[in-house]
Amino acid sequence: MNVSRRGWLKLAAGGTAGLALAELGLGPSEARAATKGLKLEGAKEFTTACNFCSCGCGMVAHVKDGQLVNLEGDPDHVINFGALCSKGAAMKATHDSPQRVRAPRYRAPGSDRWVEISWDEAYEKLAAKLKAVREATWTATEKDQDKDGKEVEYPVNRTDAIGLLGGAQHTNEECYVFNKMGRLFGTSFVEHQARL
Image 1 (cartoon, rainbow, N blue to C red):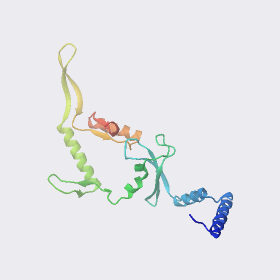
Image 2 (image 1 turned 60 degrees about the horizontal axis):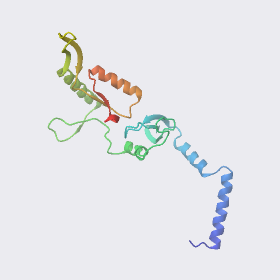
Image 3 (image 1 turned 90 degrees about the vertical axis):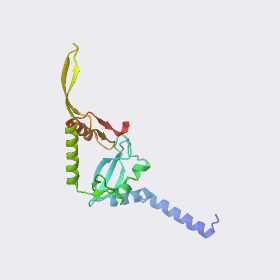
Image 4 (image 1 turned 45 degrees about the vertical axis):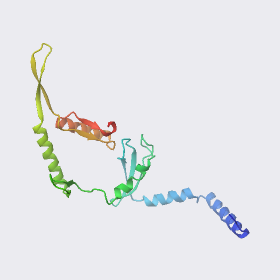
């Protein structure tokens, strides 16, 4: 690189002025902190979990006027301490993606396309299907032999046709409710994605 005498003087004067301003408290870190405060001013803060893998890293979401404006790692979270992998750091892009499905869809038997339906219709279809499967496969009792060799009928009250699969983005409380829901349905097949 070839620097003239005049260019060197400009560079030296600019560097000296920059150092003097930094001593007065106008450094780049303060400027960055000030712009961050302006960006998040008036935003509500929520904690959530990353849903890409089974780690369950904590995230902090900032919502302003109903829009997600910032998403970053949660420094108080026990798993990631504020750090995010490349997928977690890019999570906001998946939230804003035009390809993201935002309403339930249904594909009728024999159809070749998905149709958007309302949430109420989706809940009704799901509840009716769960009830039909549960009633068709319900086992109230099973026969077995006791220690004396006599045949005894034991109440089991279960179905083996329903299974539930949880994910890493669920909190402990959600997992508890999820497990209770499985027991309510009468199934013991409650699994977690991290073990698969």
